Length: 594
Image (tube, rainbow, N blue to C red):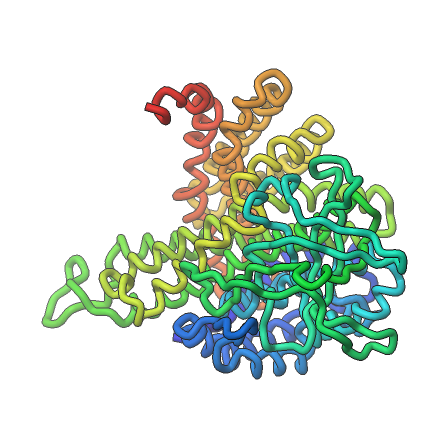
């Protein structure tokens, strides 16, 4: 089956769960007209359904190919990319001074979900280009911006992010790629990078690589890393392409999933060194790279949402068509569609509820980052920046975990046919698996959450968020709406568990850091489940009380209730895992080395 963007669900999550409507009304978005959001998403959904989704399976089967040092993408890929850029989709949130539309990141976030749902392997290319635009626009010199930004914003050229080396994965400080200064102010770069997404392809005439390397006199570790812009083809002052630069693809990975996305080994320096240009300051490259990575982490979280939505839609369609067994109490001949069976309904509801919660968290992260970038009030800016930083690791890790879980449920709903490639359910599962690994593994996101985000300012950011979530729960509790069932009670319990677990970790960050780290992953899951449950309740209240035309509000109330009573209800167990599990983990050496 093809993909249909769930526009009503997305608008509810964006405007109410994520708070875009309130932020616009507060003046944080300038003259942005929120009424155009639906039209943008409708058009994005149409492009995704008609152009990108039909290529998804063919791209998986064909993959990308490396021949004679050149990468060829799957059939239809280059044409789809040309249509993508011609329609202006690459420029949605790009800076207006360089040809972008200047729309909010939150709008582009919703579009990113759509591209990922339709064809995650295709969507990876512009995802990284947008991160490259952000880094260059924030940290690049005026000269580099003049030469490269307009082409990147339009999508005429694409961008890559090059960090990983064979000996330097998550530990970026261990990288060995080296840079040498040249009298004309440029640099020569030597080294090898691995796992480079779209490091080479045939969709554009030039590729702009953003590469981390170390100068000879640089300090050790991450403090001695610089970021360089290295074009595939050198660019003249008038914008025309010149000689081929000394950066080449030397290998193409054979992967579990995302086959149509070329994952390259890149080699620099076989012919005198790749010509590179400094981004930002020498030895301050990690600061520049984090500008790319933070936006990319949100985008990867949205990949999790997108692939979960696609897996859910396919499983739902199959459950309505596949006939097996009889409903309890049914009479007459023939078999019923499997959607009548309670356990199948449970799985489908779990898929939809988890996807909706992850969507709201990602959109809320995007709105916070938008307000941080656009607000003129210093206090509003600071609060939004802190909120965006807090939510980013949750958006990335929780949402990609959900993408994996929902894709797995999708196979289960299909039964034996889910294990057969022809149905497509297996591809979603394979494609989803990488999302919890790249752009910082989910374990690293959990460490970032407990050590940097929770620990910042003594936990003030977390307490401020808990206060907001408590007010949402209070609205559910005082609504006296029987359709919510025990939603208020379950979410109140979850908030209590999250607060106690947060305080426990804060106490141990300095006294027993290994105990805090041992509970980091279940703590992130506890945080995501509680936050997601409260956001779904907030959306259900909005759908029930507004006149914006979201359809039958009962379906959103039911969804929020299901999440609270089936997912958020696990919060006390996660709390106990955080608090009680540390000792067993930290004393596991005897078992693991037995």
